[in-house]
Length: 283
Image 1 (cartoon, one colour):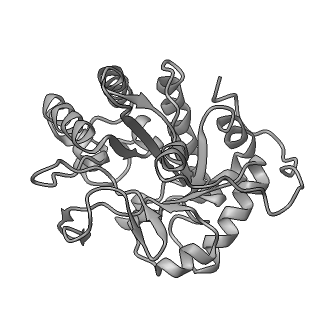
Image 2 (cartoon, one colour):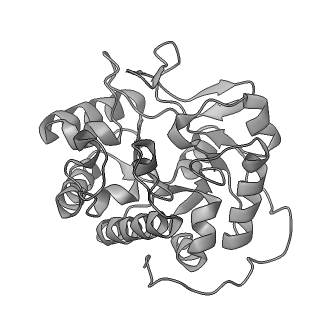
Image 3 (cartoon, one colour):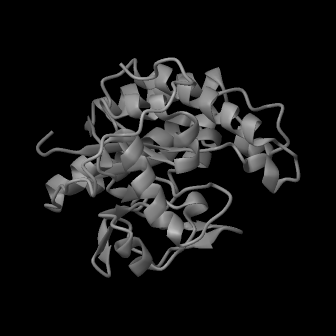
């Protein structure tokens, strides 16, 4: 490669609440356990590579599994997915960042809103985030139409935005549903096209996709290729992309390419000691 290309693998770590959208009752315990089983499955793939990734984590999930979230910081970036996945108020922007910093003992720079919910940019800036990755610059029927937004990183009222990658010409989305439902060869081709054109590739998934979710009453297109099949597909993708660029965290890329500065924690206190609820996740 004549210049560095950044591969940004990101995962939205959250309570598995999708069945609630389809009127299936699921206790918070079941939501958390499914989310955590997915995180374990995801890490079994990532730990087999040398990739660094970004995990956008709800503070609610992190409070259930603090030891595991702390372990991830040994190699990966923890960013905010707000406080709860199914509820939101403006104060959650700041509170989730502070809670994640308290748990990890590391600064939290990035935000991704659940379901890419649109919130005022000034609210995000005031909550202390350096970048936001809540934009998918394409058209998803019934969800959003962001075809007018830039395809690649841009500033919005002094907030750096890192959109999810789409194909260079037709803006075909390269997010989790495309990865599940496109033929693998087509997804890989479009992903490499975007990487070569833009100099970076921003992909996002959910850990719960990588465990068995067939029992839940959600659309078939959302649970297709779940579990071990999707784990194998992810490993194959990471292996194929490795020849095209370098796996890195989102903060590392934006701090290098946009000269964003690191900051100190608001408090010098280390993360609060909380009981371990999990087996190790990260090497």
